Length: 95
Image 1 (cartoon, rainbow, N blue to C red):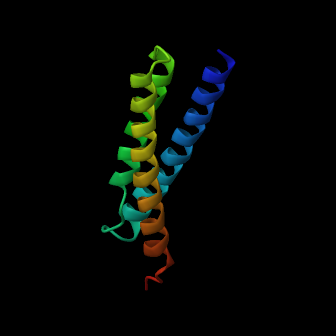
Image 2: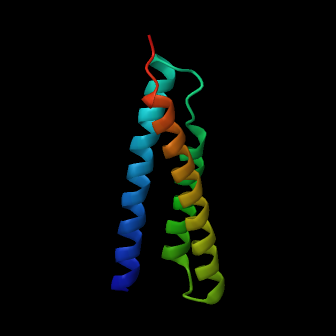
């Protein structure tokens, strides 16, 4: 029980981080550069919501574990890729 609560809180924290990154990307996209990537953060947040849902309603079986692992993998790849893309995009100087 405690492990599930800890995992859900950890995933919720990752969701909040992705939300902040998404808001930064949207602001940068609106104000400075319309080509700034932001949709990967949405994919990461949706995958984290799926992982949180799987951890909460899961039956602690093999299927639930695989579902949560795949959702976390998708969230990690999408969030990391867009974070790197956002960093590279923001590093350029706009005049």
